[in-house]
Image (cartoon, rainbow, N blue to C red; front, top):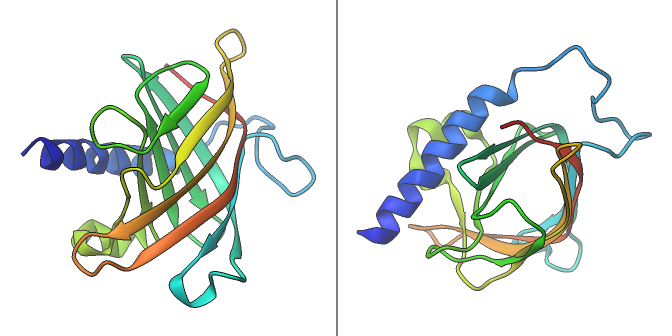
Amino acid sequence: MKKFTHLFFLLFAVVTMASLAGCNDDDDNNNNNNNPTNSVEAKIATDANLTNPDDWKSASVTAVLNNGVTTITAVGTDGSQLTITLPDDATGTYNLSASGGAGVIYMEDPIAAGTNPNLIFYGIDGSGSVAITKFDKTNKKISGTFQFQAMRLLSGVRRYFTLGEITDITYTE
């Protein structure tokens, strides 16, 4: 039951962040290839392309710090969505764990996943980590790296994230 509650919390966070991901201030923090700030990038592989993973890049990123929990939601250039939830607001390495560590949810098609939760990939406990190397509370910026595996719970289909980079994500409180 505790695992279900944790998964429900992560799913709630994803839905909340998805609704916020469409919001955009009229500032100059938009991500583009010439300015890697406020971006999330990684290599993502399937079982079929483990040796030749695809590039994954964010088109938009939002981050929220709420009651000490940090949630970063990145919408990919392909429309997919990656949400990373951290149990703290500090630098450090957070192992994937349903019991107090980092949590990850990945959706290749967030709209379809909204009506079919079997399409959601969840971070696998112990399969990786998120290392936050910068948590600047003055300028409200987060940077770090990540690598992990995510899996659809019913089918066992996996996605492998490697060489993940979080670059100067601006967060709100």
